Length: 139
Figure (cartoon, rainbow, N blue to C red):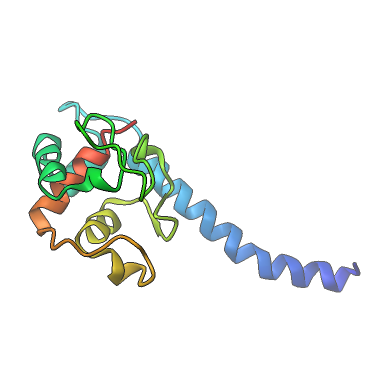
């Protein structure tokens, strides 16, 4: 590889590496720590209640497709298990695991990833926030 080729490769790779670094840094910053209330930042950011999220997960039958810790009967194998969801970098491999993307994903997955197997279940905005708050408790 000549000096010119190396410079060209560095130019092509640098933006992708920078984007990955920025996504990981923003997620780690957003997911780390708790405040005086004991809530993690993502739970506050989605303005949801994990207990109501548990009820919504049962109501929308999320456990038919996903294995979800803490949810009775949620042992599906169609979708990925949601174990340690709060530590994931991506949602379904397509969107950064950040509260605004997660609530949008829960409400209408095909709008974000048209070829996803996850259907639009008609989840309300309020229920999406509660489900997201529950998922962010999975550490």
